Image (cartoon, rainbow, N blue to C red; front, side, top):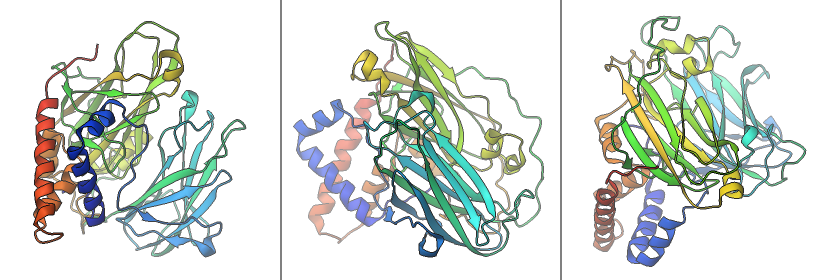
Length: 433
């Protein structure tokens, strides 16, 4: 199975919220017509307080998701205890509130250091020229395979998160979502150089009729999609989250389209499309400028998923190092509201997955969380049907008998029926002009 972070507390919250929405159709219609640009954190994310010094740093456990806060003058530390051989990745998502002023050079920088302050990795993420507040992701890694780092051995490590601000940025706090995961060593040696013979020619994107599939509001709520053409509405300032199962040996291609409206003033990076690997490590992104006409662009060609990609010469190649659910985000710049109004805009996502599935590497142990770097039959089924974390939560609740009484089970079953009927109704193909 893919990563499943929704536990019982989150399940109960999701079930109650969905049940109330089903019982209050007027409020459901209002929510559907006015999507919120807010980010949905993992419902089971543990609260953690970043410390000003390593001496006070709280621990992060691999396989868990955390929620924290980054002040305007922020430099925060978190602690990790690592074994000797696992590759460890810590993804940090910074989430400014909607309406916050951010600068072109604003963003976050993430360091991973050992107990002797030796740097294992340094990565940054910026809001860029769009200056649109949105979730941005930077990451840290302890990569034992790399000859470029002196970070080896078991023991204490520290994640340092720094806020990067321009002179015109708002002093508001940003919320953080942190996710630490680990990848086992291999049982036997693999190639130590990235494959050189992959097809780098941009393929023809799928041209079938678009199927409506609204995206989620966070990594944990990402909606599954497979190869095909998918459409949704997005309002200025909103970010939609999708995930695509990509197995070993398969090659992912992504094209995004922003639908046309009345011709107007130009907005740079009006639609920002970003791709992240299963560890939530950034792979690539692109921005589409907009003047009212329909605009389309594609991510650069990416290599097939291969363990040896980690030895590649570019960030994009190195990030395609494992199978699993790859995340796609679509962000519509808040500047679109100033030029075109705050009404929803139609977006289309064209996803193509080429290649034959290959055998997985000979890992010595499962990933943490388990199943993170593989594609299961359930993952493929969810991608075909449009499942997400909310659907997983409902199904888990249905499976629990005797908790909360039979009435809860009946409510869950009723909610599931409503969701299924709405999904069937929403599967009618539409265009986005």
